[in-house]
Length: 419
Image (tube, rainbow, N blue to C red):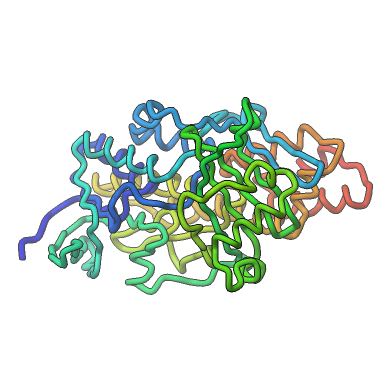
């Protein structure tokens, strides 16, 4: 069997693998991308946050994506009963992009893959990695295509951007339980026939039905809208019952006073997908000759749309470090990759946990709003979770809990409580 020689093998052609490939292609690195599925394919993760725009730009993919006229996302809206909290990405703490997109991932990922192929990147679709061995300086991977044909690739480095496939965590037994409580989701797309004109029709919204149950509404520029229900796994199972995912999602929509009229009689474009206990984690994010990026390492929760951001942040960082390593530089993967990514993961983990405790919801929905606090939280929601000049990043582990306690006990707070 002939062995193909490459510098870097990338597993997965989603956002994480695409930005890694785009970055490396611009530096004339011999790369090969393998993707188990065929594009376009259905996948969750349709709401982006502004930090990802930096990654698409660095990877040379931004012009191709901008040409598609995806629905612009200038912020996010959170609804709880009569109270509505809108975060405007142009009014946040610190620097950064003030918009991003709401995207049908099937179309979005296909555009990136096609742009990479146009630039000469070798992407092998419907090809899976079935075995890998590391000998220190290189790895030898066995690949299998959809017909059962096998081939081998020797690489100096492997970036596992396989998402929910979690290829290397499975093969190398790196999986570990998530620190988050089990949650699940059911989602589908609808033809948004009752979409209102103007901002209301395009506004991404999270409708909070109770502390642990919320509905997502993500309008696309193609006239369709993504609808999903997220809750603790027991609630989702109860909602689903014996009736199945279609009836479960219909029931979820009926629980939303805000959206029941708009979506009551719409037809789902596909059988609603059930994502069960989606949070995941690993014992380590890297090893000799490989790095794990995106959902192959860590996935938290969809409530703040952080999934694609962590995917692209880790994907392009792994590509940068691997490139430097190929040039003979000694890389401290623990400090420069794992510790760095963990800082951002820790921030968003706190926000997810405090969302489901209700503390963060207290900050979101308390009236009157504190605009300074809102700007600092908005920067986190935009994905700038490594900017420790923001006290809502630096002191994430206590500032939300402290402020929620003060609000609930009718105490006033000042900058010294935050800063």
